[in-house]
Length: 237
Image: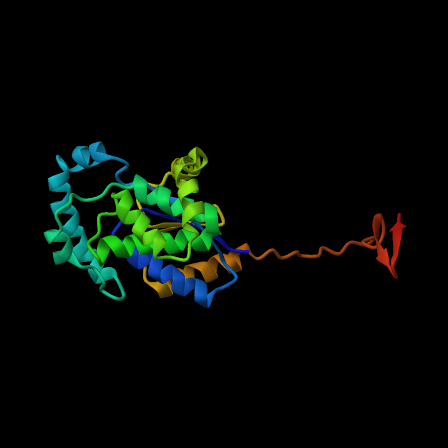
């Protein structure tokens, strides 16, 4: 079994094309298990100010990242000019991460992924302020998620704990950026890599993880053991 922990942030531009690719990977390799993990590039206003000097500077700098992310995106979906003209500062991470995690509480990993992608589309394509709870609620209402259950999960302290648990895993894996894939808890794929490279890496890991037993024959290999023979438990010494 291949388990992939997909670490990402709703405001991460390179996570947008990576999420699209991981959906294609899942279609080609339905046997893999994908678990979505939270990573916060900017938990609050202070993070933007510390990194960029101000939130105004943050928006200008981050939009330059969008140019490269749009080139990386297989569908080139980024609406850079739309965001430049939008009259709000660049969002922080936590409201969107909590919204996606609440969807995961209600509808599992598929629910998380649905809302995560919808929030990213809202930001990168539709120029929506996904820091705004009213915007987030409107996005969730347009989905198949049970809105009342989602609202309850959103304000439940246990949901914040789940997000913070992901942050602890970020530290445990010593991750410094996203997107990042942790495969079977010990292999890292960093960044928005091309899909064929992601699939090749997973295939290589699958082969490496296959357990094979080498039988070492000895002169009394049939003795000193217990096994089933014709439905009976037989021991030979």
